[in-house]
Image (tube, rainbow, N blue to C red; front, side, top):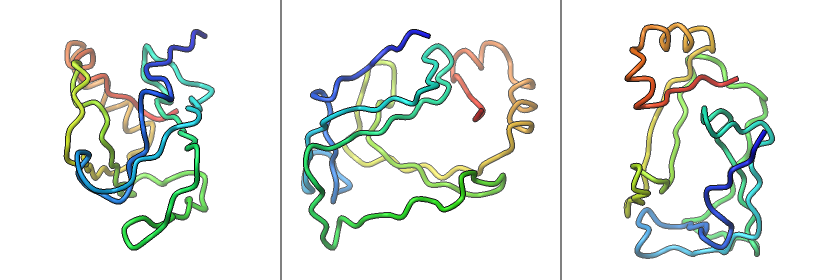
Amino acid sequence: MTRRVFLEADQIAAVVGTNKLSSGGDHYEINKIIIHENFVAERLQNDISLCQIKEEFNFNDRVKPIRLASRPNIRPGSRCVLTGWGFTDNQRTVPDNLQVLTVTVMSNRRCSEKLAQTSDVLRLLIKPKCAH
């Protein structure tokens, strides 16, 4: 499997304590990006990484630690909130406002059924994926 790295650690920063990328909050340099060991770029499978920051976060009233889930799997029907300033288009546009998306988890079987109902053109355009 070929590993493609889209960004290097010195090209990004961790921004905490603000909802605006252009103002407020603290910026932390990234020491290392840890790519999921089963990442498949062509299918965007396991498209998740961890970023190790160079120094510890300064916690305050706007920056607090979160506890990791105690269960290894999230059950279908659970609602999850995703946030970030990731690219919003193919031109690598990064929004100024923190993006928030609430999703409802579905089983892999239901996800596969839904994908089977989707046209080939739409699947190529939006690249939907099911967890594996």
